[in-house]
Image 1 (cartoon, rainbow, N blue to C red):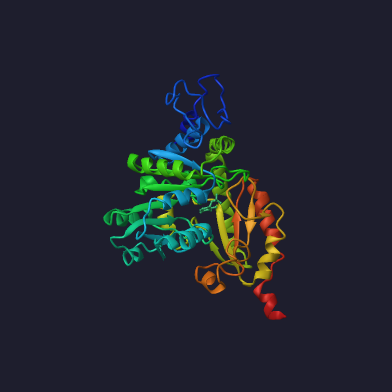
Image 2: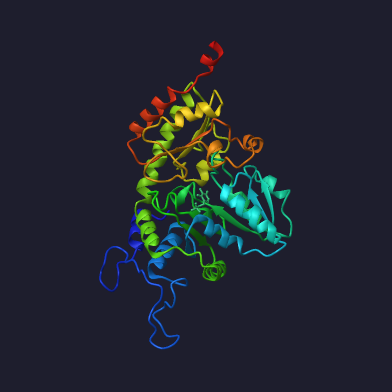
Length: 390
Ligand SMILES: *Cc1c(COP(=O)(O)O)cnc(C)c1O
C-alpha cells in the first residue's frame, strides 16, 4: 500500500516559487519559443501542469503506469468504452452503476457493441458469456447499493485467458480499501466525485492504466474526445487525496459499528455490509479489501414499504437526504425512489433493491453522534409487531 507519507510527498513543491500547494494553472494555451518548440505544454486540452500533478498522483495511489483526469466519472467510463469497436462485446456486473448502464445500453449498444450483464459474484457465471469477441470485463466491487462483492483476482485470470481487459470501477472501495491493479485488473476507474474528492464539492473522474500501451491509447482518446478535468477541480481533487487515508479509515470504522448495530435492531431486516460475517462474500472482501470494508451500508426494514423507509430518511439529523456518497458529511438515500427509480420494480427487487432499502454513506462525524442519529430515526419506523396488532 502506498502510505500517506508517500502520497503527500509525491505532490511536488512548485519548482518556480517553492509553493507548498500545487499552483492552479488557469490557462488555455502556452507561449511557444518557435513554432512547435515549447516547455512541454501546447494546449490545455492536451496537457495542464495542475492536471499532470493529479494524474501522476493517482497513478501512484492505484499502483498504475499512468493516470488520466476527466470532468466526471462517466466521462472516464466513456473514454474506456471508446477502446472498443463495432462487434466487440462487454461482460459487465449485473448491478452496475445506473449511469454506466445507461451509457452502455443506450449509447454503445446502438453503435454495435453488445453488453452482457452477469452476476459476477460467482466468477464461473462469466464463463457462459466469454467468446472471441469479448473485449472488456467490467466490474464494480462492492456494488451499489447492495454491496455485492466479486473476486477480482479470479476474474482477472478469466479475462487474461480470453485476451479481454479487466476494468474495475473502484469508486465504492476507494484506493485505501482495494487496489484492483495489484489483483490483476488492467484498468481502474473512479468517480472522484466520491471518496477521492471527499467533500461533496466537485465532480471528477479518473482512469488509471496498468501498461504503457494502454496509457497511450487512453491518452489519445482523452485528447481526441476532450472530456478533461479543469485545473481548479484538479487542485481540489489533489487536496482531497491528501486526507484520503484519514477520512476513509474513519468512515470504514464508523460503518462497521453502525452495521453491527443495525444487524441487531428489531426494525431492521437485512443489512448489506461486506465487513459483516453474514455477508455472502465476506471472505473475498476481507482478502481483497485489506481488512477495510468501506463507508457505505445498505439495509432494508422488516416492514418493507416505501413509506416506512421514508420515515427514516426524512428524520435523520446528520445523515442528509441526498444522492451521492463518500464525502465528509454523512448522507442517506432511498434507492427505490431516488438513484434506482428508473429501474422497473420487478427488476429492482430481483437485484435486492427493496422498497424499504436505505443506503447510508458514513461521513467523518463523531461515530457516537451518527449512531444516536440512526437510533432515534429507527424509533419512528414501523415494527412488524405493531402492524399485526392493528
Ligand atoms: C457516481 C458513480 C459513477 C459516476 O460518476 P460521476 O462522477 O457522477 O459521473 C460511476 N460509478 C460509480 C460506482 C459511482 O458511484
